[in-house]
Length: 235
Image (cartoon, rainbow, N blue to C red; front, side, top):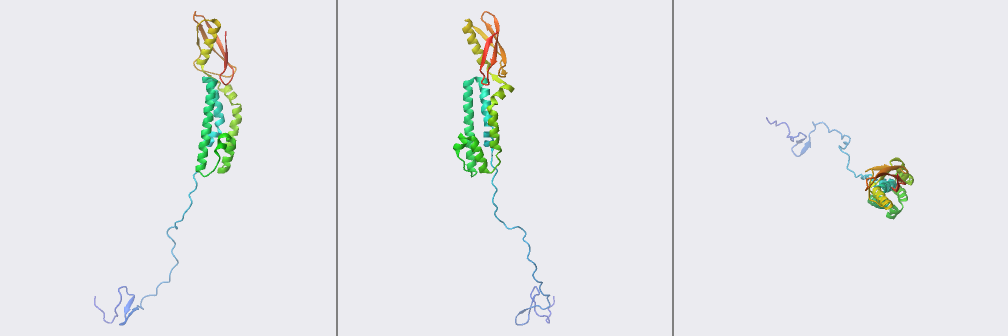
């Protein structure tokens, strides 16, 4: 490129020229554009948002709501299968389960920041469930279900007896009939009852009594109540 001696020295970008004493703005350039509006941010500014609390697990509370029915069911079934003495143990075990559910639910509530008394949960379940629902600001469906189940449990044994019947432990029935017959007749006998019997209260089933001399008779066994108590007589 030839050097033009008539043209003053220019800066590489053409914005300035040398007048012999100092650099001056190039008057041949167009004036700068006015500043435009501020640009919008490409991303929203970071900010802290509180984490919403996790939903409360009500599984233990719902189990407590249905506990009255569990007590009745355990007592009725065990009474028929193993007798009243074992039924009492079954009911005690169900009560222990009820206490364990109460304690676990109290721990879960305290972990979520709700203070509730353990004694109330153990000894007065319906009051605890009402207080609990007020603390966690939920509906009162759980304590209402408990009340309904409790009312049903008052006649629950009769409902079980009159619908599915009482499951009888025929080993106990055979033993009692055999002992009674041997005491009355003074001879050894064998007793055969059905292996699985479910009988409604007031209804009967039959067992075969066979003596050592080969004679046979039928014993009518009548169920007295939901605890599996019965009476028998030879025909």
